[in-house]
Image 1 (cartoon, rainbow, N blue to C red):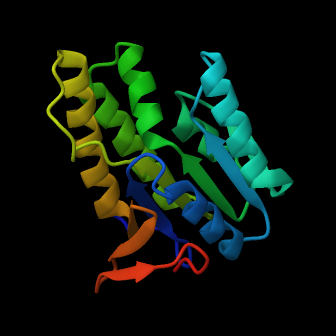
Image 2 (image 1 turned 180 degrees about the horizontal axis):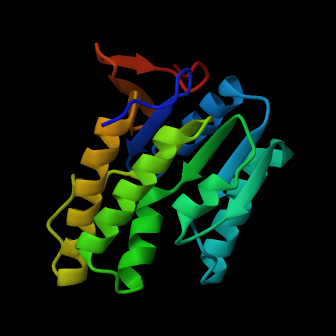
Image 3 (image 1 turned 90 degrees about the vertical axis):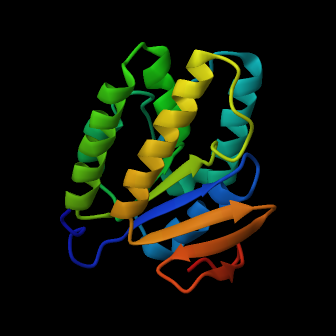
Length: 189
């Protein structure tokens, strides 16, 4: 695979729900560029989700231009004019595609397209995702398909990323480049 454009970073931040990964990604973005964008994949399909989205918007403040795109994130990235973009959340994007009835193979093709685009962008790209493979085996075909697609997508994204972080229990560990190191939320990197 081609390396990202010179001087630009592709970063993958994964972890469990409420583990600190989004806050860490925002802190990293603030350090990487003055012009910041946020590509949101969530949709407010109910009141509780609308409240979550509003909370995340308040957390970001006005310093990030927000682009909402639940499905066509590769296309949306091409239009972003910024120094750094945070894509949050890849697992929601993958779920959106599965719920649209995209076949797992087609979804992984879209992951490959996304990777090809982020490698060519002249900006830093920070991808946030949920690690879903550490739980129980889902009891239904859709749940298992989601877990499997996420696992395959995460492997591909990890290979493409220059930096990989894992958020667990509010602690952020840098996995790549090695050696593994615990990073504080206040001082990403």
